[in-house]
Length: 142
Image (tube, rainbow, N blue to C red; front, side, top):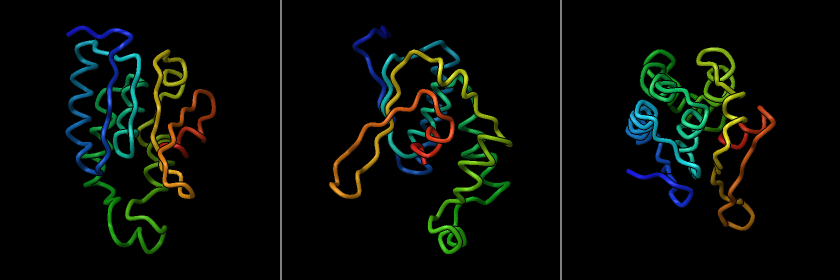
């Protein structure tokens, strides 16, 4: 497979479908397959961050191993946090304590990494990047 500057990687969202994607990205990293352009949405953006930061198995641990340990999906979180996911755990405790995210490698990676969001006012897709601010990177992927 030839990966050049005209080859990009698109990572889909879809909650737990991201488990499959995390395995594919781990295989890519194991074999040194890296893309210069990665665009991702939702769960794909979470997986993409681990891929761009060159952290194999990080996405697997959060999606499989820690799901059983922390039970971070459920109606309880919808009632207490307004989201079916425990956002405090996923976007604070995981990257900052339990599965430390390598922000330095992420920010120093020369590849373009865009996370797709929906503008709530216009309904249009917006492509966001963050290359310097740790909290904003976590806010965008959230």
